[in-house]
Image 1: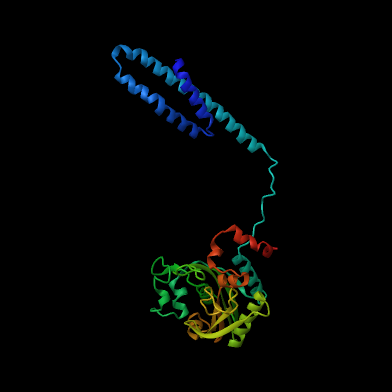
Image 2: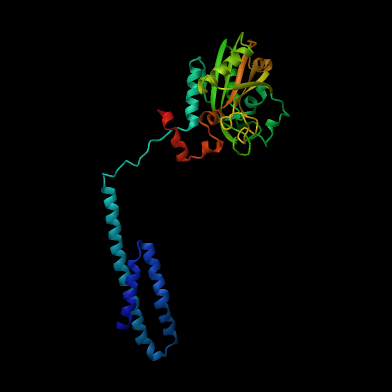
Length: 340
């Protein structure tokens, strides 16, 4: 067996280079394929009278391989167990590397908006993300042939159930349940879903706030006062806002509020689609049919839908809406100060 000792020494050297049982098994198998397997092939071709002697040598060589492997694997297991025990028993691990977490900018902004409307005695609700076509469309005066009802625009479960496309579905439900109130103030917030392609300023899932205020005597002046007060609360007195006429089936008249693009300061860029402005609020006086279908005798009310994601982009100068949902710690870390 002396002629095989050099090969056994080679095996021991190769095993010593491994750092895990799996690596050791691979090293052993490579060694066997290189040095032991050819001996079995040779054994097949030997004359009968030589096979017994040579076969005995081969078996002894095989046994030595197994012995050396077992010795090494046992030793390696002991070392690994000692290391694991040392790690488990070390109660003095330094925690300096732990960093303070930060709330997502969407959460920060929702908290600020909720605080603003609570001061105005609004009831705050989040509602269900799964709603019915009645609350999402029918009770909001949205016609059957409206593009928003198409599957290319909206996520449906069946003909009656869907993911809410706007939080107006929540406020519509609250209107039907509270139609005897003489001064109803509802603010709903949460995720809404549109079948949109994701880009710099659009996402198939985004956050929205919707509000209704139903009371006799409210006017478009009341609506503009409320929106302007909110935007000044969020961005300061110098915020640049423009109002323009628009159309929504559930309000009449309808307006939209835009804020100057924080990325280009009104000059035009890819974020604002070269307009210099970012649309953030759709609003108007509640349509008479929406009020009557909900069971109200009151004739005046105001409503607004606010894209929180875009509000956050403007407030925190975020140039890509997709960053908000990326779970990128380096992105979120910048909001630690906002949490204080």
